[in-house]
Length: 256
Image 1 (cartoon, helix red, strand yellow):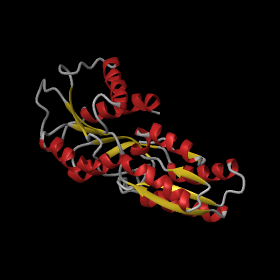
Image 2 (cartoon, rainbow, N blue to C red):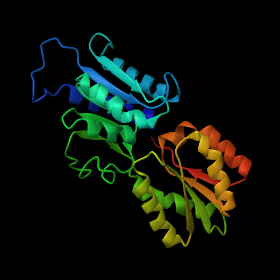
Image 3 (tube, rainbow, N blue to C red):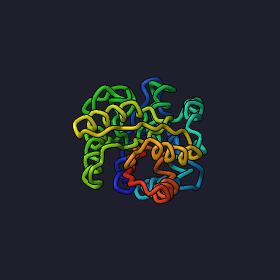
Image 4 (cartoon, rainbow, N blue to C red):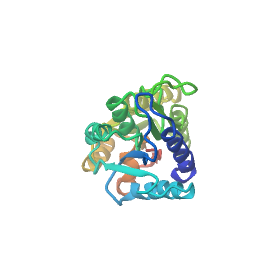
C-alpha cells in the first residue's frame, strides 16, 4: 500500500510545509524541517517505505540537506517510546511531522496542537480520536484512512466462508495499539451476526506470539484472525510460521 500512497503523503507534507506558521514568520531562505516518526530499526523493513518517500521528494525537486531537512526518529521496536520521540521533534521545532503508525500519530497529536501532522494510513482515525470527522477532521492531523471498520466484518465473513463449520475464532490484538478497543468492538458486532464466538488475545511483543497461538488452540479455536497492526505486519513471517506449525487457518489484515 505504501507505493500507492507515497505520492499523496509527499504532497500533503510539502503542502503543509509551505503554509506559514501563525505564530511566527518563516525566515527567507530557511530550509523546512520535516520530522518523521518511523517504526522499526534503520534500515529495516519500514526503511524501504522511507526510501520511497525520499524518492518522492527527489522526484519533486527536493534535495535532502539542501532544500529540505529530515529529522528521523525510530522507535527501535519499542512503541512505548513514541511520546518521548514526538516530544523531541516538538523541541526541535520541526515545521511538520510524518507519523508512521496510528500509535505514533496519537503520540504526536498529544505532543503538539499546532505542528501539522501527516499520517500514512489509519484504519479508523475518527474512532481513535485523531479527528472529529473524515470530511472535516479539525485539529492538526491529516492523512489517509483505509476505512477498516467496514472491512473488519467482511474479513470475518470471508474467514467463515473459507473454513466450513467455523464457530470459534481467536482474534489477535496488539495491546499497544490505541485502536484495539474499536477493532474488538467491530469484530464482536460482526461475530454476533455470523453466529461466531470470538476469543480475544492480546500481545505486546513478538515474544508473546507463540503463547497466543497456544492459547488459541487450548481454547479450541478453529481459526485465527489478526487485526491490522504495524507489529503484526512487521513480523508477518514469524506469524505465518506459527500458523503453519499450529495448523490453524489464519487471516491477517495488512496495515500500519
